[in-house]
Length: 249
Ligand code: NAD
Image (cartoon, rainbow, N blue to C red; front, side):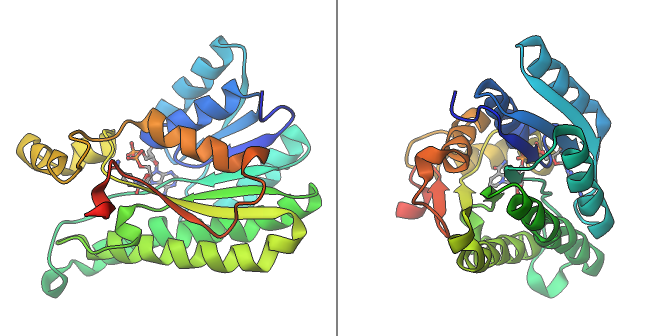
Protein backbone atom coordinates (compact mmCIF):
# COMPACT_ATOMS: atom_id res chain seq x y z
CA UNK A 1 0.00 0.00 0.00
CA UNK A 2 1.51 3.29 -1.11
CA UNK A 3 0.05 5.57 1.57
CA UNK A 4 0.64 3.37 4.63
CA UNK A 5 0.94 5.44 7.84
CA UNK A 6 0.07 8.67 6.03
CA UNK A 7 -2.55 11.09 7.35
CA UNK A 8 -4.60 12.86 4.68
CA UNK A 9 -7.23 15.58 4.49
CA UNK A 10 -9.59 15.71 1.52
CA UNK A 11 -11.92 18.72 1.30
CA UNK A 12 -15.26 18.43 -0.45
CA UNK A 13 -14.94 14.69 0.13
CA UNK A 14 -18.64 14.00 0.53
CA UNK A 15 -19.34 13.82 -3.20
CA UNK A 16 -17.94 13.35 -6.69
CA UNK A 17 -14.19 13.58 -7.22
CA UNK A 18 -13.32 14.22 -3.55
CA UNK A 19 -15.26 11.16 -2.47
CA UNK A 20 -13.31 8.90 -4.84
CA UNK A 21 -10.01 10.45 -3.77
CA UNK A 22 -10.82 9.86 -0.09
CA UNK A 23 -11.77 6.25 -0.80
CA UNK A 24 -8.64 5.64 -2.86
CA UNK A 25 -6.37 7.21 -0.22
CA UNK A 26 -7.93 4.94 2.42
CA UNK A 27 -7.61 1.84 0.23
CA UNK A 28 -3.90 2.64 -0.03
CA UNK A 29 -3.52 2.75 3.74
CA UNK A 30 -3.94 6.43 4.64
CA UNK A 31 -5.93 7.64 7.63
CA UNK A 32 -8.34 9.98 5.93
CA UNK A 33 -10.12 13.07 7.19
CA UNK A 34 -13.23 13.31 5.05
CA UNK A 35 -14.05 17.00 5.21
CA UNK A 36 -17.04 18.78 3.74
CA UNK A 37 -19.41 21.64 4.43
CA UNK A 38 -22.24 19.13 4.40
CA UNK A 39 -22.51 16.15 6.70
CA UNK A 40 -24.75 13.88 4.69
CA UNK A 41 -22.54 12.59 1.91
CA UNK A 42 -19.38 12.80 3.99
CA UNK A 43 -20.67 10.49 6.72
CA UNK A 44 -21.59 7.94 4.07
CA UNK A 45 -18.04 8.13 2.68
CA UNK A 46 -16.59 7.52 6.17
CA UNK A 47 -18.89 4.49 6.56
CA UNK A 48 -17.87 3.14 3.15
CA UNK A 49 -14.18 3.46 4.01
CA UNK A 50 -14.66 1.77 7.39
CA UNK A 51 -16.68 -1.06 5.86
CA UNK A 52 -13.71 -1.81 3.60
CA UNK A 53 -11.40 -1.92 6.64
CA UNK A 54 -9.99 1.59 6.25
CA UNK A 55 -9.64 4.44 8.73
CA UNK A 56 -11.51 7.73 8.37
CA UNK A 57 -13.34 10.45 10.26
CA UNK A 58 -15.57 13.30 9.20
CA UNK A 59 -14.63 16.86 10.13
CA UNK A 60 -16.96 19.59 9.03
CA UNK A 61 -15.33 22.65 7.47
CA UNK A 62 -16.32 25.42 5.10
CA UNK A 63 -13.14 25.99 3.09
CA UNK A 64 -14.12 29.58 2.30
CA UNK A 65 -13.60 30.43 5.99
CA UNK A 66 -9.99 30.75 7.25
CA UNK A 67 -10.96 29.70 10.79
CA UNK A 68 -12.55 26.48 9.52
CA UNK A 69 -9.35 25.57 7.65
CA UNK A 70 -7.28 26.27 10.76
CA UNK A 71 -9.58 24.15 12.93
CA UNK A 72 -9.62 21.33 10.35
CA UNK A 73 -5.83 21.00 10.44
CA UNK A 74 -5.72 21.32 14.23
CA UNK A 75 -8.37 18.64 14.74
CA UNK A 76 -6.66 16.34 12.22
CA UNK A 77 -3.32 16.55 14.02
CA UNK A 78 -5.07 16.12 17.39
CA UNK A 79 -6.79 12.94 16.14
CA UNK A 80 -4.05 11.30 14.05
CA UNK A 81 -0.86 12.96 15.32
CA UNK A 82 0.38 14.44 12.02
CA UNK A 83 -0.56 15.63 8.55
CA UNK A 84 1.19 14.32 5.42
CA UNK A 85 -1.26 14.81 2.54
CA UNK A 86 -3.89 17.42 1.70
CA UNK A 87 -6.16 17.44 -1.30
CA UNK A 88 -7.87 20.80 -1.72
CA UNK A 89 -10.80 19.66 -3.78
CA UNK A 90 -13.90 21.51 -2.51
CA UNK A 91 -15.42 23.60 -5.28
CA UNK A 92 -18.65 24.96 -6.69
CA UNK A 93 -19.89 25.84 -10.17
CA UNK A 94 -21.49 29.25 -9.72
CA UNK A 95 -23.87 31.28 -11.87
CA UNK A 96 -23.81 31.00 -15.68
CA UNK A 97 -23.60 34.48 -17.14
CA UNK A 98 -21.34 36.57 -19.39
CA UNK A 99 -18.86 38.88 -17.69
CA UNK A 100 -20.87 42.04 -18.45
CA UNK A 101 -23.80 40.69 -16.51
CA UNK A 102 -22.07 38.43 -14.01
CA UNK A 103 -23.82 38.53 -10.61
CA UNK A 104 -21.49 40.22 -8.11
CA UNK A 105 -22.50 38.00 -5.22
CA UNK A 106 -21.93 34.91 -7.40
CA UNK A 107 -18.42 36.15 -8.19
CA UNK A 108 -17.62 36.58 -4.49
CA UNK A 109 -19.02 33.16 -3.62
CA UNK A 110 -17.12 31.24 -6.32
CA UNK A 111 -13.84 33.05 -5.66
CA UNK A 112 -14.44 32.49 -1.93
CA UNK A 113 -14.66 28.71 -2.25
CA UNK A 114 -12.66 27.87 -5.38
CA UNK A 115 -9.71 30.24 -4.92
CA UNK A 116 -9.68 31.62 -1.37
CA UNK A 117 -10.54 28.14 -0.10
CA UNK A 118 -7.41 26.66 -1.66
CA UNK A 119 -5.23 29.46 -0.28
CA UNK A 120 -6.69 29.16 3.23
CA UNK A 121 -6.26 25.40 3.01
CA UNK A 122 -2.57 25.59 2.17
CA UNK A 123 -2.04 28.47 4.60
CA UNK A 124 -2.79 26.12 7.51
CA UNK A 125 -1.79 22.77 5.98
CA UNK A 126 1.78 23.79 5.15
CA UNK A 127 2.92 24.48 8.74
CA UNK A 128 1.46 21.09 9.75
CA UNK A 129 3.26 19.36 6.86
CA UNK A 130 6.51 21.02 7.95
CA UNK A 131 5.96 19.78 11.48
CA UNK A 132 5.37 16.26 10.11
CA UNK A 133 8.64 16.28 8.14
CA UNK A 134 7.05 16.96 4.75
CA UNK A 135 4.34 15.65 2.50
CA UNK A 136 2.26 16.44 -0.54
CA UNK A 137 -0.57 18.77 -1.52
CA UNK A 138 -2.82 18.22 -4.53
CA UNK A 139 -5.02 21.13 -5.55
CA UNK A 140 -7.98 20.36 -7.77
CA UNK A 141 -8.05 22.97 -10.52
CA UNK A 142 -9.67 22.18 -13.89
CA UNK A 143 -9.00 22.34 -17.61
CA UNK A 144 -10.56 25.77 -17.02
CA UNK A 145 -7.38 26.63 -15.12
CA UNK A 146 -5.76 26.87 -18.54
CA UNK A 147 -8.38 28.08 -21.05
CA UNK A 148 -11.52 30.20 -21.01
CA UNK A 149 -15.12 28.98 -21.01
CA UNK A 150 -18.14 31.11 -21.84
CA UNK A 151 -20.45 32.16 -18.98
CA UNK A 152 -18.09 30.85 -16.30
CA UNK A 153 -15.93 33.89 -15.48
CA UNK A 154 -15.64 33.34 -11.74
CA UNK A 155 -14.95 29.62 -12.05
CA UNK A 156 -12.35 30.11 -14.79
CA UNK A 157 -10.64 32.96 -12.91
CA UNK A 158 -10.55 30.95 -9.69
CA UNK A 159 -9.11 27.85 -11.37
CA UNK A 160 -6.43 29.88 -13.19
CA UNK A 161 -5.62 31.34 -9.78
CA UNK A 162 -5.29 27.89 -8.25
CA UNK A 163 -2.69 26.93 -10.87
CA UNK A 164 -0.53 30.00 -10.16
CA UNK A 165 -0.94 29.61 -6.43
CA UNK A 166 0.11 25.97 -6.69
CA UNK A 167 3.24 26.83 -8.66
CA UNK A 168 4.21 29.58 -6.23
CA UNK A 169 3.73 27.46 -3.12
CA UNK A 170 5.63 24.62 -4.80
CA UNK A 171 8.65 26.91 -5.37
CA UNK A 172 8.57 28.09 -1.79
CA UNK A 173 8.54 24.61 -0.22
CA UNK A 174 10.29 22.40 -2.80
CA UNK A 175 13.45 22.24 -0.69
CA UNK A 176 11.50 21.27 2.43
CA UNK A 177 10.19 17.91 1.23
CA UNK A 178 6.75 19.33 0.46
CA UNK A 179 5.52 18.68 -3.07
CA UNK A 180 2.59 20.77 -4.31
CA UNK A 181 0.80 20.02 -7.57
CA UNK A 182 -2.48 20.82 -9.31
CA UNK A 183 -4.70 18.65 -11.46
CA UNK A 184 -6.93 19.79 -14.30
CA UNK A 185 -9.86 17.47 -14.91
CA UNK A 186 -11.98 17.79 -18.02
CA UNK A 187 -15.72 17.45 -17.51
CA UNK A 188 -16.34 14.64 -15.04
CA UNK A 189 -19.67 12.98 -14.30
CA UNK A 190 -20.44 14.25 -10.79
CA UNK A 191 -23.35 15.90 -8.93
CA UNK A 192 -21.66 19.27 -9.63
CA UNK A 193 -22.31 18.84 -13.36
CA UNK A 194 -25.82 17.49 -12.79
CA UNK A 195 -26.63 20.54 -10.65
CA UNK A 196 -25.47 23.02 -13.28
CA UNK A 197 -26.33 21.50 -16.66
CA UNK A 198 -29.32 20.23 -18.60
CA UNK A 199 -29.07 16.76 -20.22
CA UNK A 200 -28.71 18.49 -23.63
CA UNK A 201 -25.87 20.65 -22.39
CA UNK A 202 -24.26 17.56 -20.89
CA UNK A 203 -24.38 15.79 -24.29
CA UNK A 204 -22.82 18.81 -25.96
CA UNK A 205 -19.98 18.60 -23.46
CA UNK A 206 -19.25 15.00 -24.42
CA UNK A 207 -18.45 16.25 -27.93
CA UNK A 208 -15.68 18.46 -26.56
CA UNK A 209 -13.77 15.42 -25.32
CA UNK A 210 -11.96 13.57 -28.16
CA UNK A 211 -12.16 10.36 -26.14
CA UNK A 212 -15.93 10.49 -26.72
CA UNK A 213 -17.25 10.53 -23.15
CA UNK A 214 -17.03 12.46 -19.90
CA UNK A 215 -14.57 11.36 -17.24
CA UNK A 216 -15.23 9.36 -14.09
CA UNK A 217 -14.30 10.57 -10.61
CA UNK A 218 -12.37 7.35 -10.00
CA UNK A 219 -10.15 8.11 -13.00
CA UNK A 220 -9.29 11.53 -11.53
CA UNK A 221 -8.64 9.93 -8.15
CA UNK A 222 -5.89 7.76 -9.69
CA UNK A 223 -3.93 10.88 -10.65
CA UNK A 224 -4.45 12.52 -7.26
CA UNK A 225 -3.31 9.30 -5.57
CA UNK A 226 -0.16 9.07 -7.63
CA UNK A 227 0.76 12.72 -7.01
CA UNK A 228 0.15 12.22 -3.27
CA UNK A 229 2.43 9.18 -3.08
CA UNK A 230 6.20 8.80 -3.10
CA UNK A 231 5.89 7.42 -6.65
CA UNK A 232 5.72 11.10 -7.66
CA UNK A 233 8.80 11.99 -5.60
CA UNK A 234 10.34 14.24 -8.31
CA UNK A 235 7.06 15.97 -9.22
CA UNK A 236 6.29 19.41 -7.82
CA UNK A 237 4.86 22.65 -9.17
CA UNK A 238 3.17 20.72 -11.96
CA UNK A 239 -0.32 21.02 -13.35
CA UNK A 240 -1.58 17.79 -14.87
CA UNK A 241 -4.57 17.71 -17.16
CA UNK A 242 -6.79 14.65 -17.08
CA UNK A 243 -9.29 15.48 -19.74
CA UNK A 244 -9.84 12.85 -22.45
CA UNK A 245 -7.91 15.04 -24.86
CA UNK A 246 -9.96 18.25 -24.35
CA UNK A 247 -6.95 20.57 -24.26
CA UNK A 248 -5.05 18.84 -27.04
CA UNK A 249 -7.32 20.39 -29.68
P1 NAD B 1 -19.41 17.86 -6.26
O1 NAD B 1 -20.43 18.92 -6.21
O2 NAD B 1 -19.81 16.46 -6.62
O3 NAD B 1 -18.63 17.78 -4.87
C1 NAD B 1 -18.12 18.93 -4.26
C2 NAD B 1 -18.18 18.76 -2.75
O4 NAD B 1 -17.65 19.95 -2.17
C3 NAD B 1 -19.60 18.60 -2.20
O5 NAD B 1 -19.66 17.51 -1.31
C4 NAD B 1 -19.86 19.92 -1.47
O6 NAD B 1 -20.69 19.79 -0.32
C5 NAD B 1 -18.45 20.34 -1.10
N1 NAD B 1 -18.34 21.77 -0.88
C6 NAD B 1 -18.90 22.77 -1.58
N2 NAD B 1 -18.58 23.96 -1.05
C7 NAD B 1 -17.79 23.71 0.02
C8 NAD B 1 -17.13 24.51 0.98
N3 NAD B 1 -17.25 25.84 0.97
N4 NAD B 1 -16.39 23.90 1.93
C9 NAD B 1 -16.29 22.56 1.97
N5 NAD B 1 -16.89 21.74 1.10
C10 NAD B 1 -17.62 22.31 0.13
O7 NAD B 1 -18.27 18.41 -7.25
P2 NAD B 1 -17.10 17.67 -8.06
O8 NAD B 1 -17.49 17.68 -9.49
O9 NAD B 1 -16.69 16.42 -7.42
O10 NAD B 1 -15.96 18.78 -7.90
C11 NAD B 1 -14.85 18.63 -7.07
C12 NAD B 1 -13.76 19.55 -7.55
O11 NAD B 1 -13.40 19.19 -8.87
C13 NAD B 1 -14.16 21.03 -7.61
O12 NAD B 1 -13.08 21.82 -7.20
C14 NAD B 1 -14.46 21.24 -9.08
O13 NAD B 1 -14.30 22.58 -9.47
C15 NAD B 1 -13.42 20.34 -9.69
N6 NAD B 1 -13.68 19.95 -11.06
C16 NAD B 1 -14.83 19.31 -11.39
C17 NAD B 1 -15.07 18.98 -12.71
C18 NAD B 1 -16.33 18.29 -13.15
O14 NAD B 1 -16.58 18.25 -14.35
N7 NAD B 1 -17.12 17.73 -12.26
C19 NAD B 1 -14.11 19.30 -13.68
C20 NAD B 1 -12.94 19.94 -13.30
C21 NAD B 1 -12.73 20.26 -11.98
